Length: 343
Image 1 (cartoon, rainbow, N blue to C red):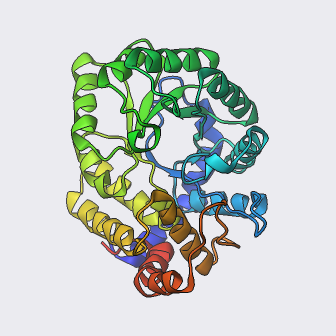
Image 2: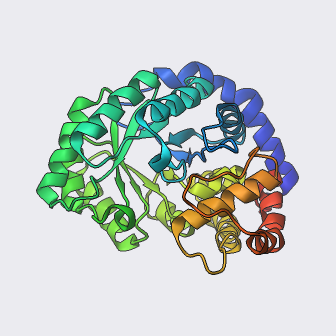
């Protein structure tokens, strides 16, 4: 697909299909998660120079992501720097995002915390603020065994008025979800899907096969940019990837091509995604939060964010790091942000 054809498709989506989504999405069943598919963007949290949430910029960003074809928004995740938000700010962010989405698609609010009580309180506040689903990492800080993690999710699901997606993120919470725990939750109707950002594709494939063998309806979302194509080929339903904030049209086109089983086009888009991942790496800073700092800086240079501010105590990018990104990331990011991939 050439860039001109792709832009025409995006325009058609914005002018016609988005209007249909406005009227019809709320009428669909969300309890089983069957309408969760495609690109859910884990939205970046714009910040003012003083470090507070920039709600005006957030609303603009969410609107632009939906206009680019995103099916929905994942809010208050790692990309949204949830570690810097107090409970009231978390609820406010959900409310602002839900107001912009306005029934056109899912709003998945991440509510994971260190205990069941805290996570359940976030879930209640998120649902009241307009979230259609909640997502949650396993409890962290302390170490928990599989039974305790299973109980956490069970109690969280029962306390929530909206469906739950479990979130496998062992590099951040010190615990890899056991496939048996996830299958048990799905079998009992306590979880409708999973976001997996562990980077262990064997785990992802094992869980896919278990759900398929047992005939349990469940939705699979990949959070690792470099594995989106293979996850969709294996039977996944979509992606929840940080870099979709920067290149939403590329991720939308990738998911759409996979739905058509046009794997040649999928590979084209995936190459651009991997190139963008590599271009955003900041030499000497391998920690994950540095990638958010890099992403925010590039987005601010492109005018998507009004500020590159990142939550303290993260060190802002220095002049050399900014120059590196200007040379290696900015040209590709500008092309993808404007047109998506050329396929």
